[in-house]
Image (cartoon, rainbow, N blue to C red; front, side, top):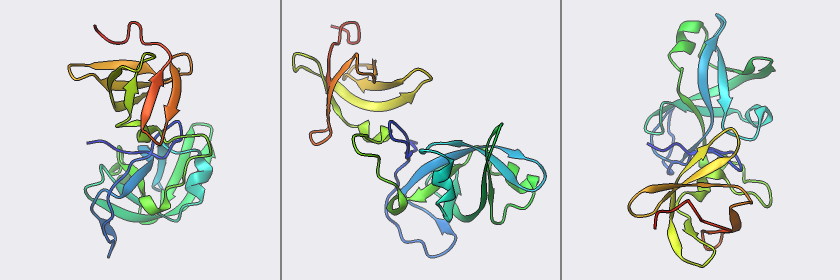
Length: 196
């Protein structure tokens, strides 16, 4: 199952529009803004890995949906967001102790798509690249981006060629142009990336 994230350059997870009538939510109109890594302390604090622009993004949120995926989530309210040397810590309403916090380990913090912040001008959300057509410098269609891998040095696009996945570095040295209207990426060069 694919999870969408809110990072520009980056990740936020989309889900579809279903009405929320109580604290449970099912559907795919959600986007992930963080992933819970571990419980911290005895009072229910959670260390999270950000999948959005920064901790200030979490501070602007009131409600968040928590779940292993978008199939079934539970609504919580933020009580606090703190930046510490060892990471970002959040406290959610109803998570009062370490036992409750441990049960959420590995889950995502989602926001409704209506609350997703648009990327800054000149940026594209990382997951928006999925489905873009990839063409080489001669105009030959090479495949479609099926996955975005976020690596320490740079992102890599997993381009499905019809027979295999080719990894394309998402950097200016390899990419000539990104046409968001046509949902197309034009490569500067393609030698060594695709089997002939």
